[in-house]
Image 1: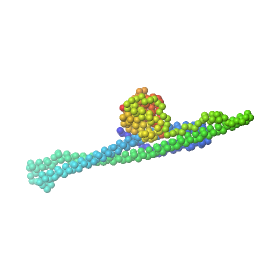
Image 2 (image 1 turned 45 degrees about the vertical axis):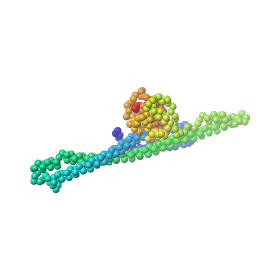
Image 3 (image 1 turned 90 degrees about the horizontal axis):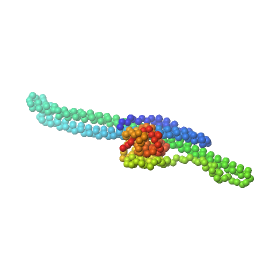
Image 4 (image 1 turned 180 degrees about the vertical axis):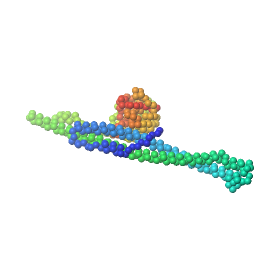
Length: 374
């Protein structure tokens, strides 16, 4: 697989974190205003969460490229060692050949026999032919080829090493910035929800006080001792409650029961069992996943191995029509390099984005493409 280098700007990720750093809202703001602001923040976080998740898939692609570069380095090292051994072997053969010529010539050197007075004799011609034989030429040519190959392998290994190091540095920097953006997202969301909860509680207390005052006034007007009605008080405040604070696990799976068998059945069952667990960049379980990590681990249970990258997963299997979806099919709601989920029958399961959970989505309205492993 030829993957283009993934170049991720540090400034781009830092800019994302700055954009997310919205000013805190005043606790005294009306609840309606706070809820409107919360909806706006959630919409922005949803959009940025999708961007961070897409970045995670780009980082998965960079990791694959880094692994391929390391494999090329290992192969180059092995071939270099073999070339060095071949060079030494050919040198030994040439030395032995020269010694044989020297011995057979009976002269001071291997070429002296050619310059003797009997150079026109048959014996001298044989010695000259032996010196310049095709066998010697083949040995010399092989030695030259071995040296050329050795130089090429060294150059290729060095280039691969430099490229792998560059990709590794970019991957580490982008991963750190993505994690920082994730923490900033969660901080903003927690702050807004906390302010809304505080405003709701303050409004509830104010309403209780108003109801108590109204009950006391009614009792005085009727000239009868009375106390604020407990039912009225509780009933007046019971209609408003603090919002549910996000816990460590999202909503449980509420889709259809598994209907597939074999490898697809195992993959679907695994994906359904992860619903509610949080999304995390580069996650492959068991506590959290990113989108391609979830589908990769699910289909591993079904006996199929695939890369940890949505783009690779979408390109390695045959496409299927959305109208013909079967449990276990991989689906995307945007494009393969950005997102992947799994059709489980009646809907799909996917790991959404930073700050959210693995969810079941009923229906196929959001599905734009699908492929079928197996």
